[in-house]
Length: 149
Image (tube, rainbow, N blue to C red; front, side):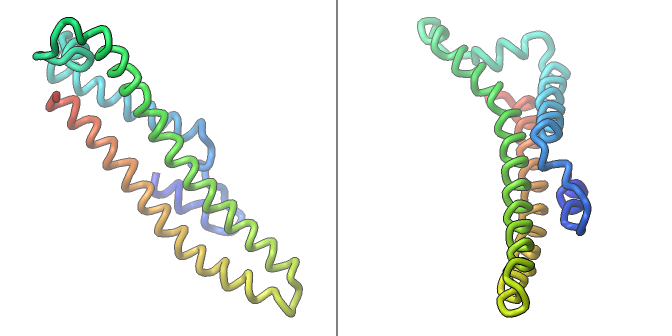
């Protein structure tokens, strides 16, 4: 993910993580991994432990189970959208300032160029942070599958 994020910062290169389908596949892989690990550690009762934890009163289960299902399904979507949106937004802003550099001519072209250089530095940090956040959240999801509630 880090390589994919940083690769798009080279002129003429393309950031594959600026496509929601790519980040969706990454997020789906993390989601499936967390369930595989959960089944590995807890066996077939894993789903019952996730969606209806022990100690929950029976009258609360009709409310608890749908909330937990939505919570579990939201994880890959939020992982995918977070990475996609941050990478797309940063690269779009850089492209806009780069275009303004040529539109400003010789007299004003230096101003967008200065902002473009500063944004490149910021975009490197964003690429690193987004890869880190994706990996940390994946580890949190796998850790929650190992150590339930």
